Image 1 (spheres, helix red, strand yellow):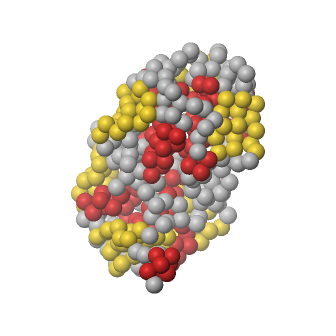
Image 2 (spheres, one colour):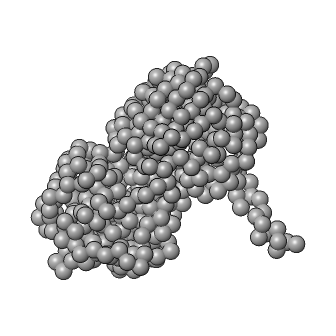
Image 3 (spheres, helix red, strand yellow):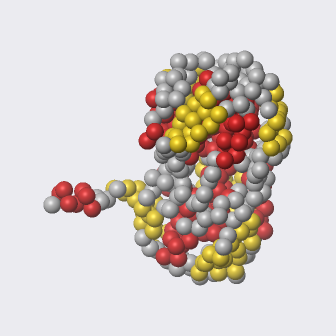
Length: 429
């Protein structure tokens, strides 16, 4: 079993380069399944969700070639639909984008129900609604989602009941090769939706309106390969911004799009941090007392739900009582018990977490409850003087590329260790 060990209490100083966006890379990787040809994808992060996604595509016949540490050639010319490995797709949430790609290209799809972090009900009803509007007959039996259509997807007008990022991406992917025009209303507006649309358009798709709440897709007969660079990861960038403030440090964060970070920057400045913006970087500095604030998570361009746990960790170090109102997921609070182990004065009431800051956190053995909860306890551990051990770090590595080395480069006393688990000890004895 691997753990991350942090000896906290040292401010972060220096410069860190942000990797490609997990949330953009995943749908783009699966969208390659629409293309009869080779796609070269640049700025791919080295995280486990990406590794699993490439393995899923290989399992259905794709040829994947690593050109350098962040660049891959993906050739889906000869893939076989409805043949993905059930156990593999259950490991990650993003595997459901294979549904849209298979249905779009072959008029049929069969993929196991997706996995990913467990922080409440994450239904795929809006995905199903969209697939059925495009002419698919769907079923969800035996742990699989299956879609069938005799003549392939056909353009339609689709209004989502809620603004769903996953459904917007999945239906956009499926409609790219559909006959006729598809209009998605109440579409999500996140930057990774724009990135996926830009990738598809680079392959010959005709998509307009991505980044607004109405997206129009004029179906084309086929797509061709292209070379495309994934956008930087705004959540990784935001996590380092918060870590810099929490430790009262000064960090320049490069390879970012500052506009994507505006909601995060605004809150940190409100708390007393100084943020300097450059063309492709932000410099975050904080010292002394950090002020309390209140946060409500909202769809983009509002404050991202994926930054909620990290902000809670930061607010533990602020003076006064703050709250975070989670409006996206109803149960994203499993990390709270871990912060309590470190002495945090924090409680949950419905969808709101209240934090009474100003009391220094103390080291304790904690676990990463999920991807963003894991980085939150890392941030908390960086502020706590003494040794904190974090277990279940595979959840952190799902979405953070080389997180230990990046923290070390900023002066953090952090390392990854291997410790024998109970089964290993029993066998040794």
